[in-house]
Image (cartoon, rainbow, N blue to C red; front, side, top):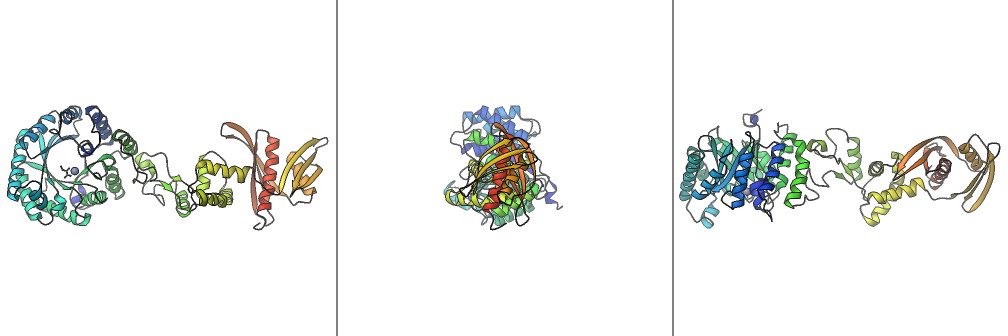
Length: 510
Ligand code: KIV
Ligand code: ZN
């Protein structure tokens, strides 16, 4: 392993600061404390508690979190490179064992000129003075992080930035954070810039990245920055943050895990945390959100469904990036049915709903489901159960049962229709199934019965009996049919007539 990736990634959470500042209703101290406890359970190494000078509420929250923080979690407060902000930040984090002041200023040519209206030399001086001031206030027990705001827009003046950072480090900053503030730079250029900074600064300095997701590449940039020397990864729960958000912590953690990196987080807490954060932020998890979205584990195409079912219990699934249990998801891979889907989805959905079915039966009823899906789009579980009832339990066809009467001496009288012609036959046999089959054979039909089973089932709220019959089709294929009823005798009859109709309806193929 290279020198660079020997160090464990350091997850520095910014949900309570960057995430919070983008909320329609920012969190109060109590809410921040609840989220902080989730962060502690997740195992993050650092938490930015807020922007202490922004409001009384944020100051109070930073103070509270620094009081309750366990000794192994770094607590920081954000401050512009101005005296008052830095004093507020120092005061707010003073109770934390691992405390940090995080100060920042923009160094991109565009921002220095048009937003800050200062020359690069003035900016450099302000940054150095701010860091030195912060270092004095925080004392030897604390640390100072400096962020080059808009670092992603600093490719043209990267030499100026690096020279400034060398002095900023001398002034007391031990963590240098490099934000892609509005994702101005694509991942491969950004990581080259990160690498330049990493190579230029002393090796005891922690390089950090803070990527916004304006163009949807923040996870890639953060993950690849780690491999170029950035150890501290600033991420937010559920990807919350200004505009399109910050780097999503779950995606970075899982991507590094999948790359074989030892990720010091309790990954199994991810899903539960995501649901809590969505609820508390009022920001819905969008359907297709990687890992945590309701659709993130859904398969609709027949090919994907087939691969997914064949690898369902394996750690590496054919069509998923992780086993859902890695992030504490219990809802497993979802099989939905559209006109693109196949028998696997039918099998999974019916089985999941608690009804018995074989893959062969699923294959047989798939054309009915496809026909319905072509008309109405994705089928609900209810739709599929209805198709199951119509095509497995109550199959319509040429054979129609009318009545059966038990007679003395192991005999029965069976009345049924075949294509509207009525048959009324007496037959003798060994038990009701044998008697009934013999009556059908006696009427001139070739019903080759092989075997049967009976089961008690809970279908919906009712306990019912199910008879499963095995017939031999004219081409030698075994056909399974089912009959369901509270009365076992009727369940047998239904299974027989369903079997006869399956063979009749498919006689061209059998
Ligand atoms: O996006 C950004 O540049 C920031 C800094 C304050 C770190 O949030
Ligand atoms: Zn930010």
